[in-house]
Image (cartoon, rainbow, N blue to C red; front, top):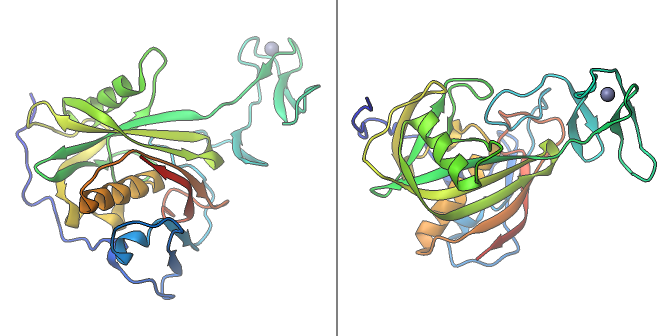
Length: 276
Ligand SMILES: [Zn+2]
């Protein structure tokens, strides 16, 4: 049985990072985009963001746990495959003939294990001019806020996956309205596809991966306690769109800085930002 909506009391007066002026005290700087927009300088300022923070060991921006065996290789992180997934034989790591990248090649059957980016799908749920966020009950980013989102499963469309993840994490039945953002994170091999959605019923409750689900007024979104860069970008784009009076579709590349972890959610630049 779903709990009735608990709206009031969820917002706790976090101050949006977007509205803070850059200063050297905490080591970050906000740089305006070259793109021109009909919005205030304050809301523009997040578009290209360079954050200099303490490096950490993980590069994961994943909504759920990822392998601890990580190797840095050229464009970013790839999982170090030790054994063949087909025959169990030990893998060697070489550049196959005719290719340019190091691959895991089985020393017994010769098959090559190609690793490709994963798609993360989720929903940006509007309700009464508020946005539904979930507080993570799992690592990474335990205790931080996120949009309901997770890895797309084989056999489902991106929209179906986003609806499923929303049900699993927020106990909310939603209807997808339109795609809102595709955000690629090349370094960690992830692409986020976020849909704008609305509640079919005014009900939600946290699933096992969430400790809390709340509707936030846009001014109360906890930018200081967000789980991932992708969520930071998505929410900023949305707020900017709402303020401009037109919600658009956004494409962009989040280029995370090498050596940064999930807690360094501002350690990136947003490049190739296109919007229609
Ligand atoms: Zn093999």
